[in-house]
Length: 209
Image (cartoon, rainbow, N blue to C red; front, top):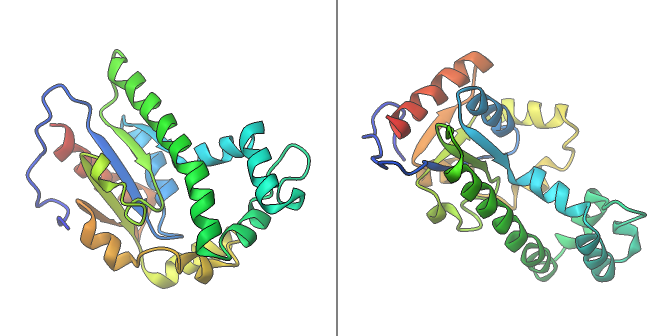
């Protein structure tokens, strides 16, 4: 873990900095991603990519065949119903991850390649990956950022968005402390959006100057 403001800048010459963003449920990953976009970074949410994949006929058919039509009624995937089935056993979860992760990885690779050719290029390419360290994906990035927040504040934020199964979902993730220990930068999201943006701006300065 590198305390904010203490790391040496990464020297990448003309290479576009490729950054992984993560954090626990309710820490404020989406808010941080929006702030990084305002700061000039190109951003991509793997959760949004998964949403798009669930709208594809190929993925809908695959999960329906595996778990039954109830998880994919009509032209949509019921993510809550799918999670209840897929996360009930490690075997089923591994199957779903094997279905989704290669497709997500391909989408991210295409996106990054397009950014490398863009003119003008963004300050950085940032990908939000909730299970970044759990999936051992951190090695693919030049640097990683972990967004952390007080546990009570996280629970309040998550509950406000209807995450009734917060504890069950959190059990599948590393703790905030573990994420922070593995991240290049740790940003505490305990105040205003403007304050969070200021901290992220400082991180970008170190990665892009």
